Image (cartoon, rainbow, N blue to C red; front, side, top):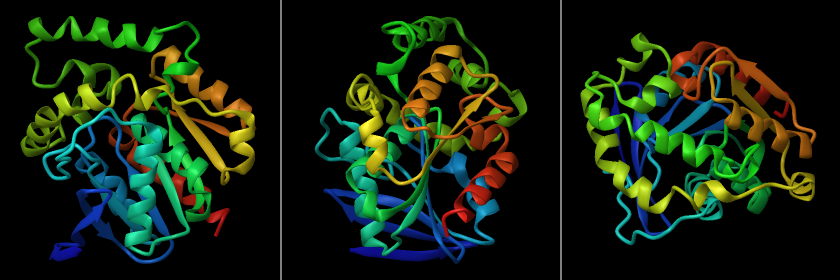
Length: 272
């Protein structure tokens, strides 16, 4: 069942897919673009990006499974394929296919899996720094990075999180999230740690995978840790996929939404 209501410039939808009532926000008219959140799993950080693209596109912004607004009542270890199946279900339920799809981090994994397992639903894929832990330059480089960051949390007293220091890298932009969004992200973090980390991020994509996937492009940030940039560039090479540098960190949608929106816009128009 889909229930909707109008709030300002967007429709608020509840879409049941694979046992989860997904909280969704839909804007604009035209060819469809899905914005797939990173490990925050909350769509509010993508709100500005959604607004920028909605002048020419139908933009679907949504919370991933396991948040306070997309509650998963049957928690389990998730894989990129399972998240890709969720994206496929949303596209089909809302009759948005074929859609262009943008995803970051674990959302990038979901985006790549969607293209691998449901290519008929996709026009093109755009990935910013997918969580490709199997492709880092040294084993467990990414996991050890996060462990080192977590060690600072007990003594960190700032108004933003430790993760935002490296992943946003801009104090003014980091402070733009609403208190309500920060609360939702904090409440969803335990689910993400138990059900996403170490499973969603372990999928890898081969030359043969890219041969059957829709056109795929990658972006990486100039401020991002080298292990994550390396993993995405090496993966892109296998598919002969273009890689564009953005002047940002991991959360491009928060740091340089205008630059990112123009990249997404021009890339999507190539495949209309």
